[in-house]
Length: 196
Picture 1 (cartoon, rainbow, N blue to C red):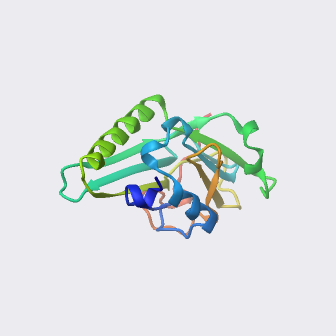
Picture 2 (picture 1 turned 135 degrees about the vertical axis):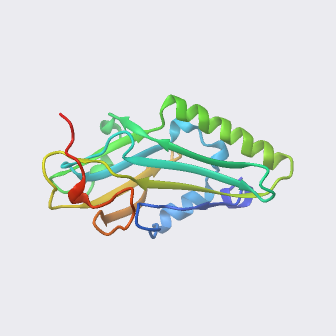
């Protein structure tokens, strides 16, 4: 059953400096998705950014939230997706990439996938018993590190996959890291250099 008819999930995309407009194709597919039936193992996030910005575990937060109308169930899961070295399976993520840009794929860890399945079970049980509530899915870029020096290209793109048959959906493109006021990102000139 489609997402908005089944669980009234609202999609929120956060990148450290507010909500971003989402492409219509992404909105359509998200409206047809059902987070309760999405295998956690199918969820992947991809970040395309200058190679001077290192995307690693903890650089991106994937959040799943749900609050029952009567507050009998509150879920505020935060998953620190980890790097998956598997770019060969998704060459289209490199379409229109700049010469110095690289794509980093991320996925849920085994522990996070287990936690998400439990949250799905609890939400599904609540809904099956006639409960109502609101939920959200969000992706947030958090502070990471600089490989050598701050690159000239500070824009990045982020994609997400919930359904392997649909593939990766674009959540935003050409977002500039400098256009933020979020403490988690901070001033990029103050980001630490990556350890060797």
